[in-house]
Length: 222
Image (cartoon, rainbow, N blue to C red; front, side, top):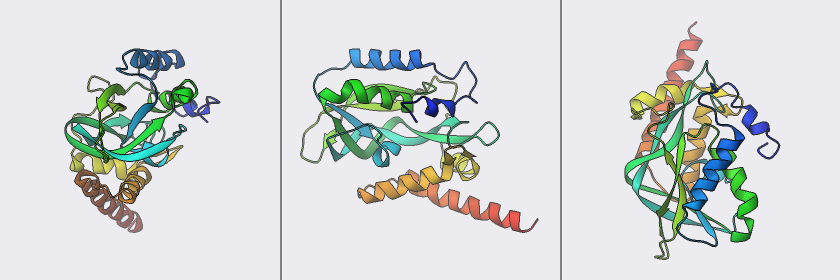
């Protein structure tokens, strides 16, 4: 879907002033690589769907910790797992705290083929800000990794990502790629498979399940 351009078709409902062109996506990738502090194999820090659906071809993966950032459903979304009629929230990272996730290593020889695919998937609206940050691996090493964090100046950024604010959107949003809740539930499942616990995600899952039960009960009484 990504290579053929079909993936970006799912974002045509987003206003043009927010939606990025392929040229903008490529320029972001080039600018980020120009700022890369090292060379050779490249580590990517996955904290959401990159854990269970990395898209790119990596040669190894390890549990890792990113200091100074925490998970947050702080990006509004009206495409993919949502729509203009059924808006949802997208996961990102915001400053503060720490995040346990999974580091994926892309061989240097594969970067030219794999990174464009990754950028198209992650940056259809430019709502993320690609940065380079050290991560702590279980073996004690601290490689520099590529991390996609929230752009807090982006039109889709939502400053209130508290569970109570986000749950209603996640519980009901759906789009051509599925439901917003499916993403959240898959996230919790994937974190558990790596023995990673995140209280924000756990609390949001509980709130969404309750919200969906309430919606189902209301629907059954009509």
